[in-house]
Length: 82
Image: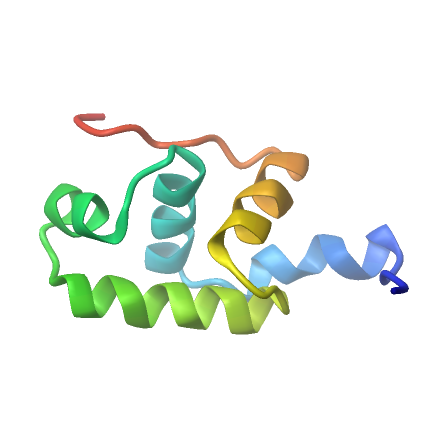
């Protein structure tokens, strides 16, 4: 499987809205959809929609790939009660 050059990958985070980026930080912090919903005071369904959008925009298959992708690009994790 070939990967795109880093110069092409680096700009993908710019595709995310501020809310999607906030949710990505929560994913990096290891939070579940339910925990993210409680932290951000939104519904779990809304979290699921945002996660789907994140995966589509970053061209990734699952939240684990999203967390790894974000960590490699310096996105800090957000833990519960932060």
